[in-house]
Length: 202
Image (cartoon, rainbow, N blue to C red; front, side, top):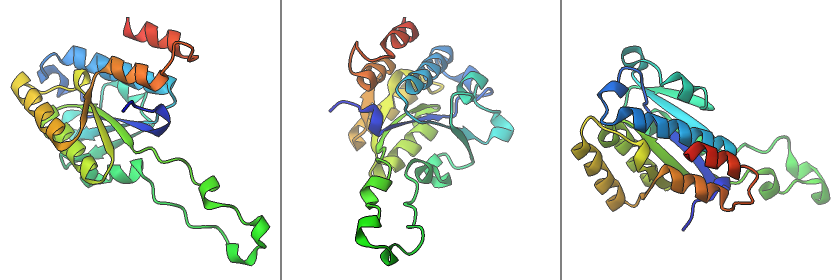
């Protein structure tokens, strides 16, 4: 199963100013998160961020924050507990007006009016064994497909990070890398954004 850009959304968890210096290989982790967000823009994939207790830990890195459509401040470790799932799967809009009063040939079909669902959640963040893990597990419980971008995730220790990956894989998440995501979103060297992707991964 390959990722499809048209059914994907990207969630970037807690790349915050006061947290990143404590993260193992934090500079590389943040660089991959920024790369992911730029790849998402090339592939027209919506990008969302989260920030854990931003009053204490600060905002996400400014370059990353600027690439997010919206950023969710939270106090729970899982962003799902703060409403992330509603951002990713907004409730269906109620039909406007009394559709039954129109002749059948003037009624809009629901399937044509509703946007395609984006059920594949590509997610990365810090700390992998706390906020990223809890958010990803709850997204799985909500029946999203979850793809964890391992080289854009970090914890203060490698052991905690790797334990998170083991647990997520066991729960049904797909483990991928930044480059895997980018090439699967574009699918072809003929994609108009292919040269831009090459520039980002070099």
